Image 1 (cartoon, helix red, strand yellow):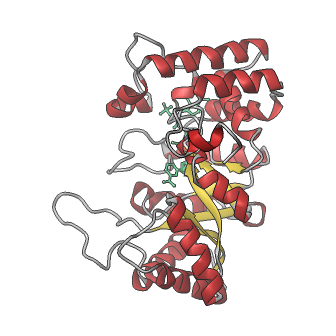
Image 2 (cartoon, helix red, strand yellow):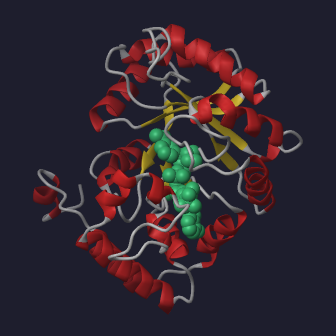
Amino acid sequence: MTFGESSTFMKGVTSPDDEARRVFDRAVDAGVNLVDTANVYSEGRSEILTGEWIKGKRDRVLLATKCRFPIGFGLDRKPGPHELGLSRKHVLEACEASLKRLGTDVIDLYQVHMQDGSVPIDETLRALDDLVTQGKVRYVGCSNYTGYRLVESLWSADRKATHRYESVQLQWSLAVRDAEREMVPAARAFGLGVLVWSPLARGFLSGKYHRGQAAPAGTRLETWKDSYKAYDNDRMWSLMDAIRAVATRRETTAAAVSLAWLLARPEVSTIIVGARTVQQLDDNLKALEVKLTPEDVKALDDASRPDWGYPYSFIGMREPW
Ligand SMILES: NC(=O)c1ccc[n+]([C@@H]2O[C@H](COP(=O)([O-])OP(=O)(O)OC[C@H]3O[C@@H](n4cnc5c(N)ncnc54)[C@H](OP(=O)(O)O)[C@@H]3O)[C@@H](O)[C@H]2O)c1
């Protein structure tokens, strides 16, 4: 999502192409073996750059992309009904366009970017199944789904004998634990892989933001003022205190501790780090060396636990849900 100059939601917060290229090369050299992009990132430019840079390394990388959102529309023209969503027509056309931009014959993991309540799930899954059968896609996954809709999709795949979603991509971090209510237990129960997005809460958990201070110049949260406002509260600053205390004990960084907390969760298949620079990537890779003790994990769990709400708190008093 940080690859390619964007004129939409990532405007001003992506890397220059030469630095993004260095991030990509360093990541693959370090053993990172999954790259996640989407047709909509930087209006297609992220897929184009990924396609160029992956040449010669294709077999070392699991290439994941997504469809659903309209590309490149501004205030001047709104997308029509065939230019977005998870209808058969749009899924098949979006996939062809992604294959072209990525310069590849096959996408390893093709994900729907968010559920689409206007299209029957059977229709979307049949279209995805056809892409697998045609050899254009190896596995299908979903992102930004509700629990009931995910289970409906598993039923549909079972009933109609189509390929099912093998993975869910979801927002999960010490700052945002909502996915633990439904999606994470569902993934555990039905054996789906979990890909984590915004594992550092858009950089907030890296430790570069400080209580009572404005977001530093040039950071994503300086640009995304509403996101910073949402994190700028006592609960989040106390969480940062707990993360920093563990980082000091383990002689590492806040980013490494925050990522290590996710890595310690058995449901996590992969973490999609959004490093904008090589330095940030190297900092994030330190997570692989951090060994959190049970006391560290408990301190982080306690500092980050949200009010789970009903029925999770009711059930949680008696057993895990
Ligand atoms: N499925 C979805 O709907 C969805 C949504 C969002 C993202 N994603 C996927 O998840 C990936 C990661 O998301 P994300 O970029 O939001 O992840 P993130 O890791 O939470 O945030 C990345 C940002 O945090 C800052 N940062 C990262 N490491 C740092 C470090 N060590 N020290 C200081 N700052 C650091 C950088 O921003 P600055 O330097 O600019 O401050 C960087 O661009 C995306 O590339 C995309 O593939 C998917």
